[in-house]
Amino acid sequence: MTQSKSRVKKKDLLEDESIIEEIDYELEDIEGLGRVTAEKLRRTGIFSPRDLAAASVQEVAEAIGSEERAKSIISNAQKLVMRGKLFITAKEYYEQRLRVKRISTGCNALDELLEGGIETQAITEFIGEFGAGKTQICHQLSVMVQLPEDEGGLEGKAAYIDTEGTFRPERVVQIIKHRFPDKTPESFLDNIIYARAYNSDHQMLILNELKKRIESENIKLVVVDSLVSHFRAEYPGRENLAPRQQKLNRHVHQLLRMAAVYDLAVVVTNQVIAAPDVFFGNPLRPAGGNVVAHGCTYRIWLKKGKEGKRIARIIDSPKHAEREVVFYISEAGIVDL
Ligand SMILES: Nc1ncnc2c1ncn2[C@@H]1O[C@H](COP(=O)(O)OP(=O)(O)O)[C@@H](O)[C@H]1O
Ligand SMILES: [Mg+2]
Image (tube, rainbow, N blue to C red):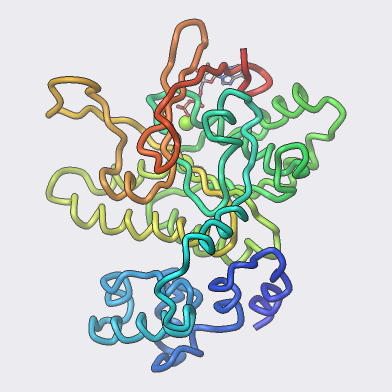
C-alpha cells in the first residue's frame, strides 16, 4: 500500500528498528490473518502489525469474536514486528529515548517543569478545575508545534479534537498576533485540523480517521480537549463503571500507540472531580481513574491562584521531581510573569 511505502522513506526519522520492521508489513502479512479479520481489526482502530502486537487480548477478542484466535494472531504479530525480540539493552533504550522530540509550550516556567516542553511518543495530560487554563494551553501548543525546531516547534500540524466546543480560532489568531506580529495568522489556522466530537463513539471514530491523515498531513500534535467528559456523561454511576473504563482504556491506548508509532505528541485535558472518600489532603482527583492515570505518561495539575496566577505541578512522573511553577494567562496566551 502507498501509505506504508511512504513510511519507509522516513527511515532516517524513525530509526527505531522495531518501528521500521512494522513499516514494511500489512495486517494481512501476519500468519493466520486474512482479509476479513484484518477488516474487523481496522474497524476497531488496529491498522498495523505494530498496533496488533501492542493490543490486549481482550480488545482483539472483542473485535474478532474469539479469545483463542486473538491470542494467536497477537503472538504472530509480535513475532513479525519484533522478531521474537523481548529484550533490548538499556543503552538501546536510551538511544531510543534520545530521539524523543519536544514542543515548547511557549512559557519558560512550564518548559522548565517539563524539561524542555511536551514530548513526542507520550501522552501529556493537563488536569484542573474549570478555568484553570487547560484549553488555553491546547490553543497555544497548536501554534507552537508549527514553528521550526530552532524556535521550539516540530514544523508540523496540529489535530484538535474538541469535545466541549471550546476551541476558538480567533483566540489562536490573538495569540499569534501578540507573540509573532510578523507572521500571518491565517497560515497557522490552515495547519490546525479541527474536529468537534459529539459523543464518545464519535470521539473514537475521529481518532481512527485521523490515523489515515497523520503522515500525509505531517501531524505532530494531537489534542483531545477533554479526554473523559463524554465517557463520564454517557456511562454514569457505579453500574456503568466497568464498560466505561474498558472503552476509555481502548481510547487511551489508541492515543498512546499513535504517539509511539508516528513519533508525535499527544496532549489531553482532564477535569477534576470530588473524591468523597478523602478525609486528609486533596479532596479532588482527576477523572478517569486508573485507566487515565496509568495511560498518560506525564500528568500536570493546574491550579488557579490569585490575580490571574496559575500554578502547575507535575504529578506521578517516572522521571520528573514533583515541583511547582507559576505562569499567567494573557492575550499572548500562556506566559511567564
Ligand atoms: N484572551 C484572553 N486573554 C486573557 N486571558 C484569557 C483569554 N482567554 C482566556 N483567558 C483566561 O483563561 C481562562 C480560561 O481558561 P481555559 O483554558 O478555558 O480553562 P479550562 O481549564 O477550563 O479549559 C479564563 O478564565 C481567563 O482567565
Ligand atoms: Mg477547557
